[in-house]
Image (cartoon, rainbow, N blue to C red):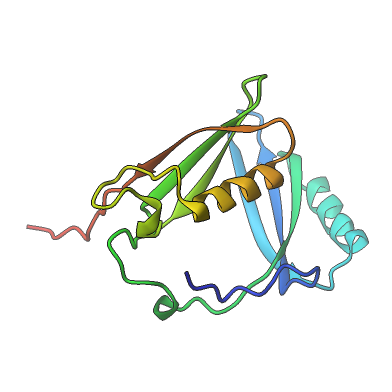
Amino acid sequence: MARTAPAINGTGTYKILSLRWIDASGDVRTDSIQIPQAATNVQIEAGVAALAAISNASLYSVGVQETYNSTADKNDAVDAVKDSVFDNLVVLAKKATNESQRGFIPAPEGGLFVEGTDQIDPANADLATYLAAFLAVIGAGYSIVSARYTERREINERVMI
């Protein structure tokens, strides 16, 4: 499949700062903004601390994410049977303590399935490579439990009558 995103090499294009809030009624929200790659932890902390000091909500989580970005271009994607980003192959991994993580493969390529079906081919080598990489990313103690294909329903524009 096509990839135009730069390699993950320690020098991202920019950072995403995500702030999670909860108010006195229990409502939660997350705000995310794009910040320069050059922003330092000291600068980010100063801004976050100043913001939290003037809010009635409780800031309970701060995330700083390095982002590797390129221009989104639909011509880089493959036009195939399962080509929608809302079509997913969902992989479930669990620990013995019942903690779980899900991995998503949007617009899964046809070779991941038993030909002519929506059934996943567990013997597919590319799928095995992904599963090994997924387990390495989510950390020790997880094992793959299952995988399933899910199609999302497309909702078109409403026409008033």
